[in-house]
Length: 228
Ligand code: FPP
Image (tube, rainbow, N blue to C red):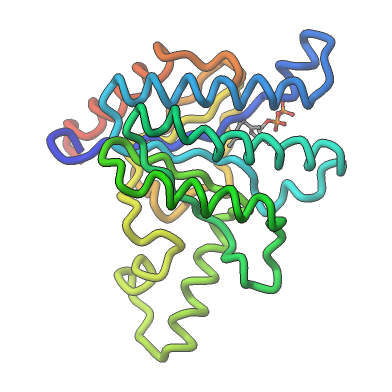
């Protein structure tokens, strides 16, 4: 990884608990989470991270109360609209998730447009790549790759599956971060994070700090230099 690429992937957990502890509605926790994501992006750029991939909205999250879903979608529109800031940081935006044309996909048009615009407007940036997983599930991604191969009649191998993931260029994850004291594996980048260490942070996502991110990067560094 060092000398080549550092890829940090984040499961941004605990927005709801952060809000509850403050007597606020869950939506306030998500708003604070989006603001902290903007701060974490700045910190990641400063710390020399090459790829930051975040779990913004999962294929399972659609069952949440409609008002909460609508609020989270609005926050994605806001995040993808931070073009000036992303340009200043030389950050390139990418997205992974169920392709919009698929029958099971649920991303509303206005979010599709915000995603497409952010990708287009930042594509010439050459610094960190921020990949947002929206309407994303790792199992669905792997099943999609398998189905693509079945249709094309290509042999199913580790390499051919990897080439049919949503974003085949996404490098292997060097460290997977999960916040808010949760120590579970999630349906996030299961293929790409094989062998990666997991950095469990006690902080809820709105409080995840640049020093927490430094800890995660240090864990990635220790793991990459240790013999198998
Ligand atoms: C987990 O909190 C977070 C999510 C469900 C994803 C939404 C994330 C954000 C709004 C942060 C900003 C990100 C983007 C890409 C706009 P939770 O609701 O599961 O918290 P809880 O476990 O405490 O209930």
